[in-house]
Length: 97
Image 1 (spheres, rainbow, N blue to C red):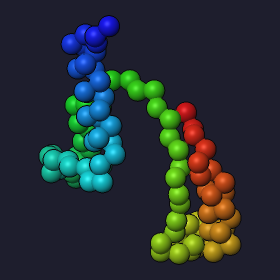
Image 2 (image 1 turned 90 degrees about the vertical axis):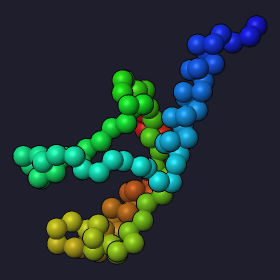
Image 3 (image 1 turned 120 degrees about the vertical axis):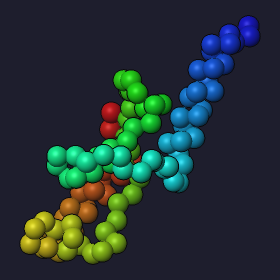
Image 4 (image 1 turned 180 degrees about the vertical axis):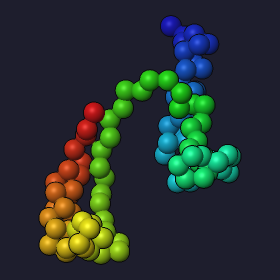
């Protein structure tokens, strides 16, 4: 049987969202108004994000381009940074609901 127009619209809408989530660049409007915490309210959620979502996240990779000292807590311990990165690497590829 042929899909109904509403089914076709749902599929198109879903593909549109997937395309936006997979995009390399996210386009957001400029900051709009002051906030009591940081002076600028720069939190923006596009209309297509509205509602409740059932999602799963998967860590693909982790890196420390500035060095392990920036991962190693407030004292910049490279030993702690190495342990933290090792724990992160164990989580790569594991889906988290």
